[in-house]
Every structure is written in C-alpha cells, then in structure tokens.
Image (tube, rainbow, N blue to C red; front, side, top):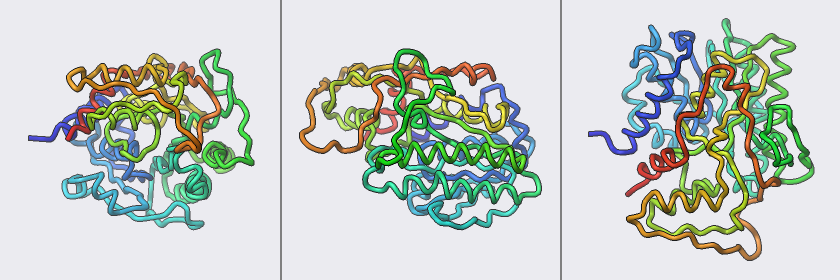
Length: 356
C-alpha cells in the first residue's frame, strides 16, 4: 500500500495531467529538468514520466534530471530512478561558467533556484548564478539542438520589486529593486534570466517561455525552507504551536503545487514565447495571521495555538519590501487555466504528507 505522501503526490500528478492540454507535443521528446531534486522540479519530473503511463503521449518522455546534489536528488526522487529507465540523473552545478553536454534536447524546464530568503544573505552568489550564468548555459545548450522546441524559465514574483498593494498586479506592473542590496541577488537575477530568454528568442528565434510563480506550497517543501508558510506547516505536523514572528498583516496569494505545475505546462504548451505569465491563485489570498489560524483550525484535535511574538535582533531571513502581493492572472486564464485547490484543501494535503 502506498504511503500517504505517495498517494497524495500521485493524486496531484493526476490532477495536472487531467488538464486539457496538447500533451502529445511532448511525446518521445528529450526534456531536461533543472532543480529536479527540489520541490517544483520534482513535480515536473513526475508529471513528465507519468504522461505515457496515463495515456497522454504515444511514446514515453525521456527525462534528464539535472541536479547539483545527487544524494539529495536520489532521496527526493525515490523509486522513480529504478522504475523509469527513461529517467537519467545528471550532476551539474549551474553556478559553473560552462555549458553542459546534454545531447540532443527538445525542451528545458529550468526550475533550479534558491527561492527561500534564508539563502539571500548567506549565499547571494549561489542564489544569483543559476538564474544568470546557468540560464545562459541552458539557452546555449538548447540552441545547439537539432530541434529546440522550448525553454521554460521559472522566474518569480520577486521581479516586481516594491509595488503598490492596492490592485491586482499585472505582468507589466513593476516596482523598484535596489541593485546595491544583498536581497536583490534573487530579484535582479530573475529579472536578468527573463531578459536572457527574451534576447535569445529575439536574436536566435529560440522558443522561450517565462512563468512567475507566487508563494507556491505543497508536498516536497523542506523543513529548512525558511519561508513562513513552510515553517507553519511543519509546526502543525510536529504538533507544535505556531510561532508568528511578525504582526501577521502581510498578505500573499497561496497557490498549491498541482495548480502551479499545471500553469507551467499551460504556458509551455500554449503560451506566447518571450512573454511572462503570472502563475498564482488570487482566490488564495490570506494574511500571515489568517494562514496561521487556518492551519491550526485544520487539525482541531491537536489543540494547537498561534503564539504571536517578535524577534529581537536579526531576522532569520531578509524580509520582503511589500506588504501585499496578489497578482492578476488573466493572461494565464486566457489560455484556459484555472486554480482548483483552495488553501484549506492544499495545506491539509501538504501537512498530511508531513505527519510522522
């Protein structure tokens, strides 16, 4: 009998593949997934491997999982490596100023990135290089292919910088980012990665696609992720009271993993090249305080509480510059995508996979 975690993730993959998309486009192709040992990268790998099994493609998809830490990837991908001969694990550091030899590749899904603010202060160099040098290397690799069909760049809502919180944020609604700050290592490198995608498309006609996820959560987020929604979920899973180290007023739009990954594939298979798409669930908007109360309320039998306190001295990570970040996703919904999972249902699923 599969574990609760395996059952839930399998259900998430079924939900992704149930979307009405031209999946046959991927049939028999060679797809490279970067960050394959991580949260979203792992979902992308699982979805690709399931396509032929679920009857969505005539031929299996060959997947090269590009990872920096092979040991971590083997733990994350579990039995997939033994069960799927079309899956290959390749160790490569996208911090390197070098182009990997990936063979003939049709698609690259570039999800490798240190997304948590806990890395911005401790490893700004390792945060920015995969989004810039690494992106250039992957674009160069795909350009050498005999049939380059698409590079998907997983960008971030951080590219918007300090923006007004009054209205839903369209893809053109940019604020400022001070490049001479440590925290800018993530936002500025994501901005440059997007610009590279546009440049390679303009100059070399390479089909590139850009997605901007907002506060995506689900099974696979690590205990040391450092973002409050991950911390809160692990608190509940461990039967710990939630410790809220802020006033809790910051508002975010929380998007479950299966909805986000379905959005990624929607853009790759139906989107306009060199055009950014917000991928988020505006209906999932919650304040940090609301989220904390929601999570303890999902498991009343645990009798947990929300402990509001403030940190003295340094914060565990460099805080964001905006209080409310909720996007306009009309560009993505025009392609037929809709968010399907509410925060209550999504966090319930996530926490169930974390139960000891």
